[in-house]
Length: 253
Image 1 (cartoon, helix red, strand yellow):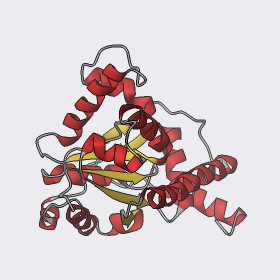
Image 2: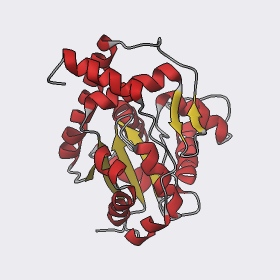
Image 3: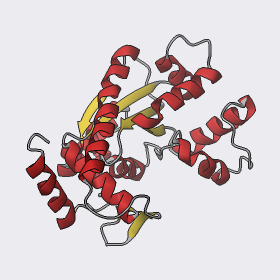
Image 4: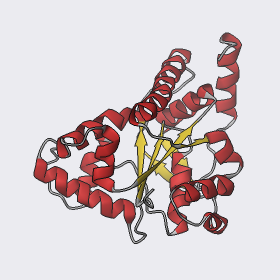
């Protein structure tokens, strides 16, 4: 088996991917993984990389420039490319690479054609209620990620009204569960055996979890000892209260 030159971190929102991506970047050997296929962020990335005002993933010339810039950004100085891919963007990425590599027989082959020998990491969160509450709190407050010193890492304008909303929690749980169930089906269909990780083990033992990822992508697991979590948990008493209230009304959640 060829030594990997790239890896894809497959997941759903609020499952710890930002923490893991930050740890991987800290190692200096695992690139700078990010959500380069996120549809809502294409204009952001294109502007950042100086690709011009017109964003058209149907255009072959733009696609070639975008993928080249993506490789450079996700690899940096390390020689290993990292990509974070959420379930909501999987089909979009597959369709895009299908246009670029139409002769390849499978979606996995198209990813390999674009990025070279690949390894896959699948990060999921067992507690879907906590995941949904975390997602909604971020949508309502605009605070998506914070640093250990209390400062803000990522904050945008709130996108949904404030307050406890059990119907929205139910909807988010269904959405996240559907994407989480789709990943194993896709892996099986593509003949992919990913490294499977959980949010719970990452939160409890970030360096040990990172060491497993480094081993999966052909790098020295001992480098994990030189890293430190760069994010703080945002769950608070409000989050805990919402979870209690929802479980009181939905004991099986």
